Image (cartoon, rainbow, N blue to C red):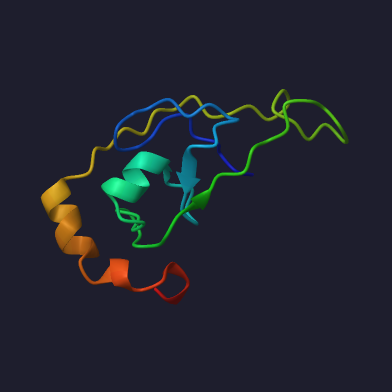
Length: 102
């Protein structure tokens, strides 16, 4: 099940479960849209993959107990600011390759 991490790993901006600003990679690394676009250049600093909008878990129990009240967002903070120089070197070649081809 998707962990729904509640802050950006880089800038620590709050990303509530219904946030349209949350972006995740296939390993659920979670960053805000601003960091993904302006700092990370759509290259995950942890795996080199790209990012997608994080899905929103339903707030209401519409069907089968599949909702935020039963499966709440994580409360663990994973704040690991990215070193901009190191990340620029890491993503120099990767950012020109579409994420689905990395």
